[in-house]
Image (cartoon, rainbow, N blue to C red; front, side, top):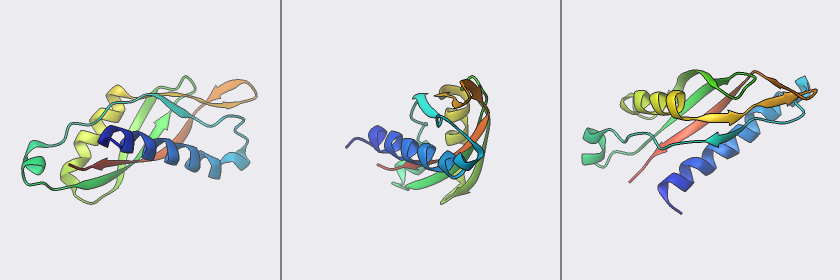
Length: 115
């Protein structure tokens, strides 16, 4: 499995799991990423073969646009900005749906940096 596949799989699993906890609030359809990209691996960390994970809290509007991204946990803070920039600028989601309408939601996504 490629590094991109691992990142995408982790994101899909968490996107599906986290809103499910809020499903009691009534989502008919959970959000799902429909456009993703890999973050830039910080050169200094890559050169030293340092790996890590950043957990992001991502706010999504009723159209599936990313409206906010916050790092909530990371193994090394030097990975955070790259992950935040990538998700905030390059990701898009199929929105969560309720009664046939897109609704805002928040998901938690882990981003893994590995060589």
